[in-house]
Image (cartoon, rainbow, N blue to C red):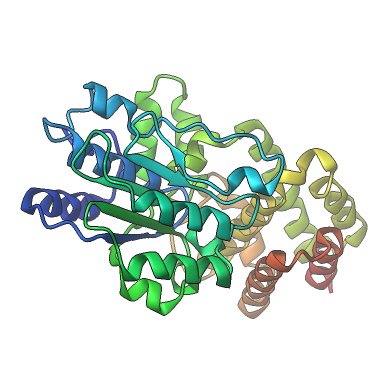
Length: 339
């Protein structure tokens, strides 16, 4: 049954199902919502629903080939100036090279969009991480959306739709996706047979609504880093030991944790927000197993201080997109927390 393998976002499933049943498919759709909730998987499942003769059976040759896309390891940007076709020649994917969705890939999409379908009655192309387009790429996409071929559908995927040109948004019918409930993620993880009840509960909460994050999370690393960052907050609130905080900063910035820096910042922010939630009497904690720590912290610090820390993390997160020195940024944050 269509979408059965995908978790959450029942409203999006219903809208897409009604759309397919009516036969009135917009030439351009915008799948907007947080990272990791399955927007790309929904796009491929929608393609199966449209192209499968049985309406998305999931087992036929058409369904099995859709979504099988090989993306090369990043070597040079020019390798990504193309549409990566799936094993089904009428379904393709455009992806960024590193942090940029190149104009060459959007121009390649324009060329592909004008070819008639090879096997099906329509072609469908997915643009992943569309917020990573620069002005040139955005204008190239706009040109395609202004004169869409009748047999081509385009699904634009973005975690930050407000960063897209308004003219692009206005030419797409938006489907909104929301974070998946932790309970649904936990049930999914436990049903896989590879997670203990404790690990499934921890991963589902840490994922903050992202199925992809839950599946990729290194729980051993997560527990270790969370313990270190609890010590950061304890030092800032109870002991004022800046030396301990700077030692932990070294571990956060260890080259082995290079790709996990933003995840470490997320963990710190979740701990700070849980302390704030505890102060306000909320039982909705991202880390309920650490409630004793939050009780201790909440009694020893002003709410305004915790709110300031949270705002400073938000500011630092925004600055990460302009390639700030991460070591300087986290050292500065810890120093201000200890002040």
